[in-house]
Structures are given as structure tokens and as C-alpha cells.
Length: 366
Ligand SMILES: Nc1ncnc2c1ncn2[C@@H]1O[C@H](COP(=O)(O)OP(=O)(O)OP(=O)(O)O)[C@@H](O)[C@H]1O
Ligand SMILES: [Mg+2]
Ligand SMILES: [Zn+2]
Image (cartoon, rainbow, N blue to C red; front, top):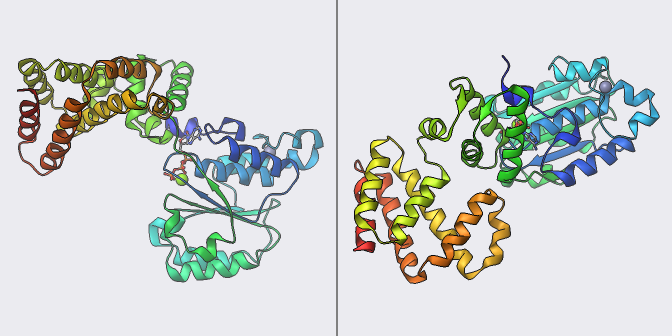
């Protein structure tokens, strides 16, 4: 079975989720045959940079586009012609992927400088995709710069990086730049759901919510995790996701926050002990708790922040938070958050992570 994240890599620009502006601009460029010679894609991991780079390679070389004016209007690759298929299969001689992270690109850039002079073997364009471009050495950057200053007509460069601030400005200024956005939780959940439908994977909603939350905006991480859990479980429930991640889901965090708000020390300490016994990562639990409480507090004073929180939470989660925010006493929550943050730094280096957390809770609830 092939990995889910490979199988569900978008085959068309239309399927690239959450990057609407980029998709629109590139479709237009495809329609008008106005692809740039150099692009810089930057943004968080798993947000579609490599995927989009390969789509550009297909659009540039798709044969159907060259023959069929009407089809070209779509600004998409056909995925059927030989170049499209070769690129999808990673077999195209004219699409060269360079991973700058592996050996910092010295040999590759040298080869690139040599090879770029020659026309593409079987397609229209030679497309160089340089991943993790910020990792190139100074020499490699210099060599690349020369090429970017006067790229041959048949060449397209796509540099992809998660750390644009490490890229030399001389290189940046010679590219058309696209900022890939971190994906909102809801988009990730939606894609996971459609993959589950397609693959006949049974999964509970809260389980998918937790998978998506733990991916922190990366489609790839979410899809890999889904893959991993689906191979272990008949039906994916919240418990199995919690176990594999060592992290509890939103509803347990909310439940605990509620106990704290009620000032029930005994119940709180018992709950905490259960979390600890369950083998969950307490530092992560505290982090989730801090985020939860911080959000209730923020919503109390700035209800419009709801729009921001929507990117990271599901509707049901948001509703729970809002209800909670009406109940809290701001001063008490502020002091609780402060203690939890102190506990957090202590926990990370402590051989007994539970102690700082217990102390913080007792201090505040006693
Ligand atoms: N915007 C997106 N829409 C739909 N699926 C996506 C998107 N971004 C990523 N994916 C999924 O995640 C997988 C990995 O994406 P991709 O390799 O394009 O990420 P990336 O931005 O290049 O990440 P990295 O910086 O780690 O290289 C894809 O195969 C696809 O299944
Ligand atoms: Mg990539
Ligand atoms: Zn094609």
C-alpha cells in the first residue's frame, strides 16, 4: 500500500487547499503561458510547497496544454499525457529535484550549471526544484545566482524553503515569491475525512480532530499519522489516537480545566494522577491546558478573537471554550496561568514532571 500522503498529493492546482491566492496566480500564468523563470516558495512544512512545484513542472510540460487551446484555459495539467505521467512517477529527465539538505547542494549546483545549457530531452522546459533551499552553501548560492541572473529560456527554477530569512536577498530578489500559509485545523480535518471516506477508514470525529491538531498545520504530518493509526486499528477512536500521541484530546483538557475552575482540589489531583498513570506526556498536557485557559481568558475580554481561534479549533471546541469563558474569574485564571507557565519550565527538566504541576494547582486552588 502506498503512503496516504503520496496517494493524496494534489494532482491539480484546484486540489491544493488553503493556498487560494497562489493557486489563482499560477492558474492564470498557466492560461497565459506566463510562468516565471524563478519562484521562491516559503512557508511551514507540509503546506504544499513541493506539491505545487511539481504541479508547475507538469503545467510547463503538459502536452495536452500545448495542443488543446480550450484545455489550456483551465490553467491545469492533464495528468494523462506522457510528460505529466513521467513527472508524477518521478521519472522525468527534465524535472530535477535537488535536496539541499542532504549534501548542501555543492555537487548538484555544479551539475545544474553544466546541465542547464542543454535543451530539455523530451519536454518543453527543464524544471529545477530545489528543496530546503536555505541549506545551500555560500558557493552553491553564488553559482545559483549566476544562473538566475540569466536563465535560459527553457529553464524554470523553484526554490522551496521553510526558512526564508536564511536565504540571501540577492537570490530572493530574482524570484517571484509565494508565501504558503499554515493550514487551518478545519481544512486538515476536512481532508482527513475525505481520505477516510475514500479509503473506507472508520474514524470518530474527535479522533480526527486530535490528529489534525497534533499536526500543527501540516497536511503531511496529519496524513502520516492517519496512515499509521489506520494500519493498527479497526476503527479509529479518540483513545487510540491519545495513546499513540501520548497526548489527550481537547475534551479531556476541557474537563480538567473545568475541575480547576470549580476549585475542586481533590478531583483535580486525582484526574492529574490518572493522566500520569495513563502514560501521557504531562508537559504536553500542561501546554494544552495553558492554551485552553489562555483562550478562555482572551475570549472573555476580546470575543472577536473567536475568528482567530477558529483557525486552530473545531466549532464544537470553540463552543465549549466560549461557555467556559463566561464562567471564569479573570484574576484567578491569570494567576493560575502564571503558575502553570512557571511549572512548565520546571517540568521540562525535572525527573518528576508531575510535582511542579501539582504544586501549581494546589497553590492556586487551596
Ligand atoms: N495545501 C495542501 N492541500 C492539500 N494537501 C496538501 C497540501 N499541502 C500538503 N498536502 C499534503 O501533504 C503532503 C506533503 O506536502 P508537500 O510535500 O507539498 O509539503 P511541503 O510544503 O513541501 O513540506 P516540506 O516543507 O516539509 O517539504 C502532500 O503529499 C499532500 O498529501
Ligand atoms: Mg517539500
Ligand atoms: Zn499533460
